Image (cartoon, rainbow, N blue to C red; front, top):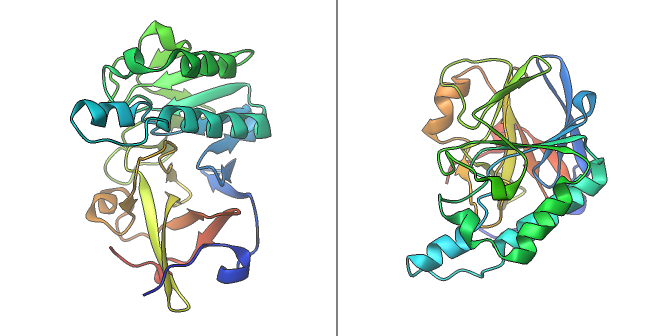
Length: 242
């Protein structure tokens, strides 16, 4: 089966760099970068940056291109410029491991501090980064409540509501017109939302995996797939497992 790129010409979907979403009545914007913008709070939310993943693998003998932190921060800078948020909230696993902060290049650390200027920056801790040092700037919390929603790293099991989470790196595999494509995605059901991983080299877990069943059960969910030119709502009947 061949592989195609998700674009309006090939997928016959309307082009949109972002898609409006609603979670418990809150109006949000899913950006093609994988970030989520909350206009009412002037907040930009990202999940699972996994900074310094490449250097972590290098320490264990697996060589990856050593520029993942720089690329992730450059992409983050682009989306910050697009929305000019008052606050940036990183939903956990921003660092790939406990030693990541000591391995970040001075130039990348300086770029991060520039992004933090003139705005509030909140790190939510995750399972990969239960502690985040002061050298990264910003505030560090285990989770927070904003405008009636809970922002956490680990999704609450069961049919929770009013929640935005990360951790699972959702991805969708689309079969359409005899072609197939696998891309990161947002997944939600108007009551809760799980963000795609924002970082480079983060990979993704198929939304049809059993890990998502405790979150959405058989009640149905929506998928918004990241494409080359926008964010695309995809009918769940068109999804397939890996």
